[in-house]
Length: 166
Length: 324
Image (cartoon, rainbow over the protein chains, first blue to last red):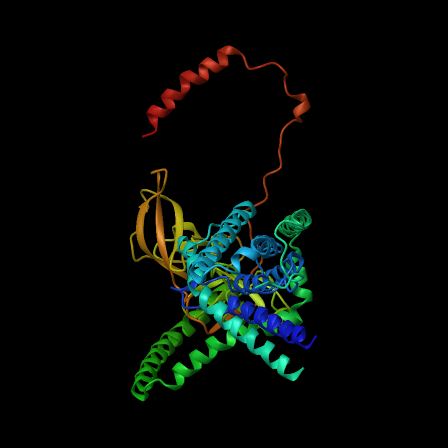
């Protein structure tokens, strides 16, 4: 029970940080390269435990992100739901991939997400995204090992602490 | 070594249920997007939840503020002295120019009084600070720290000390969102400061570029010319600098010139901006003239006589010949 509590905290703090990172400005040159942080955190948690992330939760997180971003309500909700669906479907395989293969899988997930975003923007009549932003999935895949190790470390520590306490 | 059986993730069971749920959520998202696109729900929801989301923006903007503050704190003293001297010189120049302008303004007011028109030179502005967050995938919108409770209205013009930045498109109770002039959805009516040639400056999405299309090939225009707002359309008051022409090229059709313009305002720099208080009266194009003449029901039903058509055909080459 305690462990679940701690994990729940870790999950929500991770999501909140990801949202802040999403809003945080970067220098204009690096702006289009910014990785899609909420997706990385959601992928980690959908690989880590079966019952933490569901499609519905991803949808709600996406709605919150849309609310903050102010672009189009439902846009990120749709994309994150699709992403978590795919991640959960291939979870049992993805979990035991070596790191570089996992990064490749994350790259494909993020690329799929980017294609969906471009489609949605085209349908909504918004101007196309800058060409450089197509590199953003690659940046996301490149930092995936670090995100994974960081979140995994936090998770292991929490587990160890609550096991020691309980 | 056996994996714990009860936590093993099923590969194929439950799959249809998951797919159905996904389809349901996709449909829900699609419905939301269409409704939001049609009715602008998002703005209303954002307005209601502003108390919660504005602090999040401030939190997200904090690191950038710290970096800015730290860079100020660690700037060399000599650099500060230099900057101070430059600013003082600029202030003196501006003051001198202002003193001259003062006399002209008085004269203008007197003349306008004689003409019995309203004086438009007075300008009420409100100072606002940028909240440095990124909205959406591109950076064509900025957030300001004043909102509806401070009297900000949608449509107010945002300027900085160098020129027009954009206009307010969304207000929250204590924050507002401004669309920059470089947003691809944005257009501002402009005229050439030198000779009054009119055009419309569109955003390109590139933060360093505006484009003024559809200029006549024969127009007197060259790189380095400055565009100012023309005041047509009634949204932007006349006379604020918009940008300088960097390049002239032929439009896609080859029939018109296209001017590439560097915005005058410093859009990349964060800091203070001014919100113009008074919106000018909405002056649009005149209403279409009412149709005069007998009602259409009385018009003759038969087509024009063939003779008349021939006469018109014969007349048109003659007219073309007379006009050079």
